[in-house]
Amino acid sequence: MASLLVKDLMVRHPLAIQQGTELTSVVATLLQSRYSGLPVVDADRQVIGFVSEQDCLRRLLVASYHQEGSVRVEDLMHDEPLTVHENQSVVDIAEMMVKQKPKIYPVLDEGGRLSGLLTRRIVLRALNDSRRA
Image (spheres, rainbow, N blue to C red):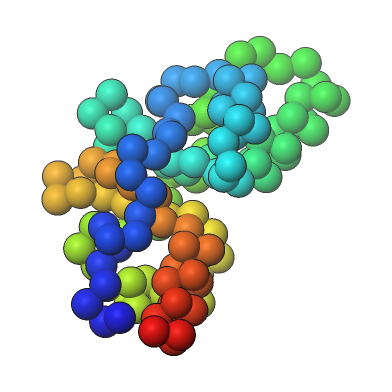
């Protein structure tokens, strides 16, 4: 189990929200995905933020009281998301997950570009499977 790496488990070719996307499209993408949040990337697939259903819900509530103009993902995303790297140990990431709040972690390749997603559920399943093996 100690030799299992993030790249062995991650979801490859993940959905991501493009920089500049309007709120209605962000919500539509989240609703179509099976994730409660997604990374926000620039044109080079560099992760510049993370946006969650909760972020969108908060903004939609505010918008229901105030007539807001065009709201873009940059207006509501977290701009310092926790990320992990492909070659990190899954055990190390599990320890980090115990201490951190996020349920979904963007995975970066050696160039710092988005290459996958790792969720707590994936790590939980891997740890559980390793106990039974």
